[in-house]
Length: 152
Image (cartoon, rainbow, N blue to C red; front, side):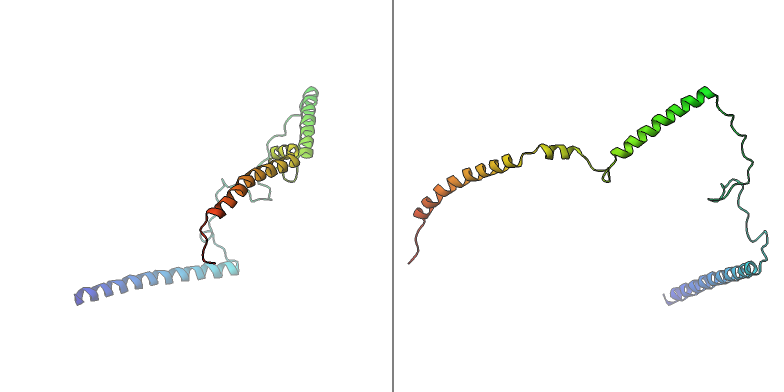
């Protein structure tokens, strides 16, 4: 059993030394690339070029040739477009006026609360409570009479 443990320890130490050797090689390569970048010695091999299929970075104009300018529409088409734009703008203005700060809330409860009669509801609650109290008041004296009295 002790031989198996010793063999396992040797194997683990070999794996660890191989791993650390690879790590040391990688750190040396990175240091060399870093120093080259700091000095301005950028080689084509060290920094890969971006693929041509990527879109341009935000805020920058691409180097592609612009497409041909579209032909101006006919005057009758412009009138139709302008009428459509006017209608759309009017609808947007109406929507903005209708929109509230709490536009995500539901307004159908507001109508119910406006129609709710508070005085009638209070009167109904008072009637229910007086009906409930009347039988209890009658039952309470009878319960007191039938209850056994203690020493006193």
